[in-house]
Amino acid sequence: MNVLLDHFPEFRDGFIGTVSITAVSSVIALVLGVLVAGFRVSPVPPLRFFGTLWVNLLRNTPLTLLFLVSFFVVPEIFFPGMSPFVLGALALGFYTSAFVAEAVRSGISTVPLGQAEAARSLGMTFSQTLRMIVLPQATRTVLPPLSSIFIALTKNSAIAGAFSVTELFGWTTLMSEQGYAIGPIFVWVAAAYLVVTFSISGIFRVLERRMEVAR
Amino acid sequence: MSASVLYDAPGPKARVRNRIYAVAGTVAIVALLAVSVLRLSDKGHLDPAMWDIFNYAGIRQNIADALLATLKAFGLAAVGSLVLGVALAVARLSDKAPVRVLATGFIELFRSIPLLITIYAVWVAFLTDYSLWALAIGLSIYNGCVQAEVLRAGVNAVPKGQREAAYALGMTKTQVMTTVLMPQAVRAMLPTIISQLVVTLKDTSLGFVILYPELLYSARLIASNTQVNGQYPYVSTIVVFGAIYIALCLALSALATWIEKRGRRAKTGIAVPDAAAKEIVLIADAGQALGNNTGGPDGPGITKN
Image (tube, rainbow over all chains, first blue to last red; front, side, top):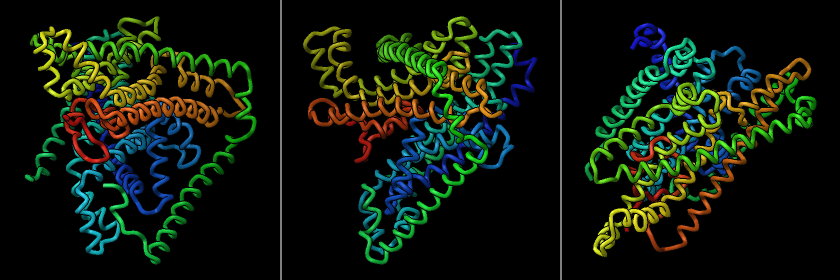
C-alpha cells in the first residue's frame, strides 16, 4: 500500500512511459509491418526476398539483442545522441513489425480469391489491388492477431526499462532497491499492466465490432 | 490466396518496370548497408583487432560457458513450462469449478504481466542467490501459461466423438484425458508447442536483468570490459552473439517446420496447424488467437474433422 502512496509521482511517470513507448512503437510496427507484408507479396523478387529476410531475421533474434544493437550500434551509424526513449521505441517497433507483417500476410491470404481476380480484370495494378481491394478486406481478419501482437508489445516494453527508459519496470527495480517488499510492488505493477492490456483488447473489440460484416 | 493472384503475369512493359523497381530497391538496400559499413569502419569498429578478441582462449571459454548457461536455463524452463502447461491445461478443463477458476486466474494473471517483471520478482522475493533457478522458474511460469492455452485449444479441437466413445467404453475421466484427449492434442499442437519453445529460448536472454551469466549477459560483459584501441567492441560482439542466437532459434524453428510437414503427410488425426502462421499469434496471446484464427488456406487453424 505504502509503496504506491509514497512514490505515486514516479509510478505515474512509469505508467505514462509504458503507455507512450507502447504507442510510439505500435505506430512504427504497424507502418513497417504493412510495408514489409506488401514487399512479401509483391511481383518484384528482390523486394520479396528482402521481406522474407526481414521477417525471419527479426523473429529469430531475442528482443534484448535488438536493444543492444539499437543502443550501441545504431548511434554509431546514424544520428548520434538520440534519447533512450527513441532508441527503445525503434528496437521495439522493428521487432514487432516482423510479427505484424506475418499477421497481415496471413490476413491477405484469407481474402477470397475472386476479389483480387475481379480487381485485376478491371485493370488495376498490383498496388491498386492491394491498397483498394485486398488490404481493406484483410483488416477484418488481421485485427484479432494484431490485438495479441500489441498486447505482447506492451509486455515487451518492460525490457526498455532495463535500458534506462522511464517506465514501469524501472519503477519496480527502483522501489525494490529502496527496500520495499516485492509483493505489493508486483501487485501494483501487475494492475497497471492489466489496465493497459485490457484497454488494448477493449479498443480492438470495438474496432472488430465496427468492421463486422454480416455475410 | 497465393501472392501471384495479386498481379497479372507481367507483359513486356511490366517486366521492364519490375526490373527497374528491382534494381532501385536493391540499390537502396545495398546503399544503406554500404553507408552503415562505411560509418562503422570509419569509427574503427571493423578493424581486425576488434574481431581478434574472439581468438583469445579466455573469451572463447566465456562464450562456451555462456552458451552452456543459456542452454541449461532453456532446458530447465522447457521441461518446467511443459509440465506446468499440462497441469494448468488439465486444471482449466476440470469439472470442478474452484480448480477451473484458480487455473484460469493464474493463467490470465501471469500471461498479462511482462515476463521480465515475473523473473525479477521471483529473483528478489525467493531466489536471490540462485539466478539460474529464478530465471528457469520465471520462464516456466509464463511459458507454462502459454503452453496450457495451446494444449487447451488442442484438447478442444479433438472431435467430440472421441471423448464420447471413450466414456461409452467406461473409461474414467483421468483415463480419457491421459489416453485419448492429451495424446491427440499434443500431436496436433506439436508445431505450435515448439514455436513457443523457440520463444522460451529467446526469452532466456532476459536473464541479464538478474545477473545470470547467459549469452547476452556475457556479451555485455565482454563488450564493456575489453578495450581495443580505446574503444569497446560492441559491434563485433553483437554480431557474434547475434549469429549464435539466430542459429539456435532457426534450428528449433526448422524442427517445428519439419514436424509440421511430417504431420501433414499423415492423414489421420486432427489437422496440424501451420507453425509459421501460428507463431506470430502465439507469442502474443495463445488462447485468444487460437480461438479466432480458423480458416484461410495459408494458416488453417484448428479444424474439426
